[in-house]
Length: 419
Image (tube, rainbow, N blue to C red; front, side):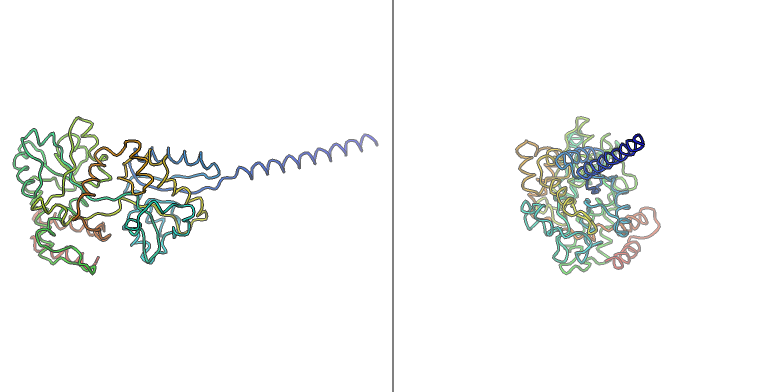
C-alpha cells in the first residue's frame, strides 16, 4: 500500500516537472519568436549577392526579424510582380519601377502610405523634389533610390583605333558607321526601350515638339511618328546599330559594338566586361543636332523605388528594413553606386567618406546631374506594348512589308488607344 502511494506520488511529481518543463520551453520559444517579413527585388548576380549580404547584417542587428527574400532578373520579376499585385500577395518591402505607381496606385492606395511609418523611416534624408516622384494623390507610396536616364556610352579604345572622335551629333554617328562597318563594327547598339527613347529624342529635336504636351496629351502627329520610324530604319540600314532583336550584350565586351545606350544604373552591367578587357569606356553627353542642345528630348526618372505592401501585417518591421536599405552605412557601403548615386543624404555621405563615388556609373550620374535640359519622364513612355508596337512598325518597313507612312499610321493607332 505504501509502495502504491509512493508510486502515485512519484508519478504526480513527474507530471508537475513535465508541466514545468513544458512551460519553460514555451517561454523560451515565445522569447525567440521572429517576425517574418518578405523582400523582393530584381537584378543581376552582383546585386543579389550584396543584397543578401546586407539582409544578413540587418538580421544580425534585428534578431527578432526574419527576412524572406525573393529575387530574379527583370523580365521574370516584372511578370511575377504584376500577378502578385493583382492577387494581393506582394512582398512586404519591394523594389518597384516608377511606372507601376500609375499602373497600380493611381489614387495612392495601391501601396502603403509611408508617412504613417515616418517615426521609423527617416524621410528627412530626402528632399521634397525627389520624394514627389513617389507620391500619388498626395500619398507617399514609395521612396526613390537614385535618378536615372538612358545614357550613351562609347568604347574610346575602339574609336581611337579608327582615329575618330567620340560622336556628339547624329551626323557624327552616321559618319562613324561609314568607317567602322567595313570591319563589321557598329558605333552604337541598344535594346528596344533604349532605342525607342533615342528615337524620341531625335524626333523631338527635329520637330521642336514634345511627345506629350504639358497637358499630358499626345503631342506627335502621324508625320512625327514617321520621323521616328525613318530614323530607326536609317540607323539599321546604314549600320549604325544592329536591329534590337539582334542585340547581344556580349558583343559590347567583344568589341563588335563600339557603343551602347543603357541606363545610368546599368552602366557596369552592360559595359563592365568591356572595361575588364582593358577598354576605356566613356559616358558622353546626350546626342543632339548641335552639342549645345545636348539633353533636349531626353528624359530622366527615378532609377528605381522601394515601396511597402498595403497588405503588410508588420508595417513597423517592414519600415525598419526599408530605412536600413535606404539610409544605413552598412547597406550603402555594400551597394555602392550599383543602383546609381543614392539620393539619401546619409547614404551619399557614407560613400563619399569611403571614397566610393567613382567609376562609370558615377561618371554617368554626373553627366545627368550637370545637364539642365533633361525633362521628367512620363511613365507612359515605358509602356511595353507601345515600345513593341514601335519596333514592329519599324520592322514592317525594314522587311518591305509596309511603307513608312503605312507603318506610322498603324503605330499611331496603337498610341491613340494606349494614351
